[in-house]
Image (cartoon, rainbow, N blue to C red):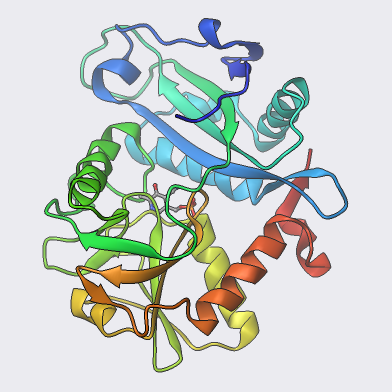
Length: 306
Ligand code: PMP
């Protein structure tokens, strides 16, 4: 289990964990009606603390709330208010190492029935240790027996808590079968993503990833990887991806806040290429790590110093 820091943000103030709770009558508990994001806070090379792409995370929270119809959040929260709350949370918890922050917006109304608009929203945030959810030195993935929820049922581009039952089913199935994580397919058999990370493959020196209409979360690190590849001059293609393209890829990797850049060495008992971390994956992994830790001076605008 993760180590959780003692001070939480709840509603509009910092408090101890035991006071940051939702009651069992809230829509958040009854229907999984919360949206969330997880972002990293890292110790930079100049020994400061910085959040990575905080504005993008806030925007995705707003977008997720909008898709679900949780309209109270944007009435009360601006980006600058959100940034101040993050700063206060980090400062009061005396963070000195890389951590993750989970920010959730909950529908905190009691037994209102199955609806979302015009109901009270509550922001919560807590800090926990930055342990990767996927092995960093060669992950083994299994195609899930569970298909990805399609956009016409529960949209993956909205990061909504209730939908994560789909991810739990698929990840547990992978673990039960002796793998590290799953590969979700859509109803037509195209590749979507992992349980909580996006996926890339390299074939013939081209970087390929499922496009945004492939029932996936529009990952902030997915976007970052595409930007890194563009700067490196690596050809990029966002498209529909068949499962068997992964089997014969030269390189496969996953990416996400909690996955970082995770090289994949096996999919469904097929070893990827020679089973070693590929050169493009390795380069992108290094550059991604540098971005998070403020090494690349031209990119420090992606960081919010706290
Ligand atoms: N897909 C899913 C389903 C996720 O939960 C996550 C983690 N947020 C990602 C992809 C990666 O997104 P990000 O890069 O924004 O962390």
